[in-house]
Image (tube, rainbow over all chains, first blue to last red; front, side, top):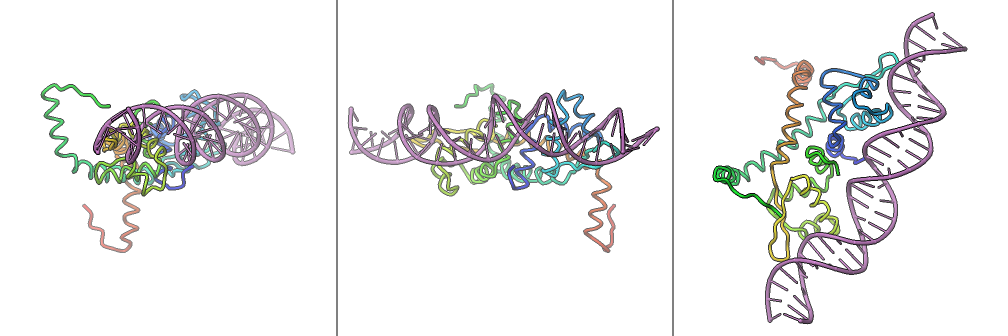
Length: 115
Length: 115
DNA sequence: GCGATATTTAGCCAATAGGTTATTTAGCCA
DNA sequence: TGGCTAAATAACCTATTGGCTAAATATCGC
């Protein structure tokens, strides 16, 4: 596991299953059993994903009877979002001219190839 | 490599070396040799990182004599940023009360004259 | 305490990631 | 052409990831 928090957050977000778990959790707290069902995945696999998310600070766990519900923790996401926003702002400034140029190209019906 | 673009982007951002490369590229195009030096890393390692970034659509390569400069491509970053922003907005709604509370804590004892 | 249910941990495995060095390919110039 | 420089590829190594099943642990209801 990469030690710095930003790396941990991005790594956690880099898996579609985990993003889907976050999407589910955005609807409200839920527990392993309820996550395992729609994802067609074993309990232990879900537990591992939750552990990754928890380690990244994206969720926290609690205890309710035999279940251990997970809920979102927005702080880590905020850090990642701010990193991205900062870069985007910087790049958008740098690429303002390019942006306008590309827009122009699109209106002319260009042939786009790279590499 | 994970197939979907969002996963590829987040995975690319999950490595501190690659984020540092992006930071360097934000200052302007540069080539492998110039990247390998400050990162104390072999050329092939840089090439691999650039390949990951390119695969995620975060950069593009070109050719200038023997060098193959890399430059930023903001589009993929935009997609990731938008994903995060969407989630943050949603969560922030959910966590509005907590946010306000935390803000209050920071201004502990101050006048609070927010709308 | 016993049994049922929910979750975690322990092993195990295959694939991927991130690094290395050595070799090959691509482009420039005399 | 041949030599020089920059970069990519090949081959290899180790650690991590993401999944599984089987076993262990935690909590509840009785």
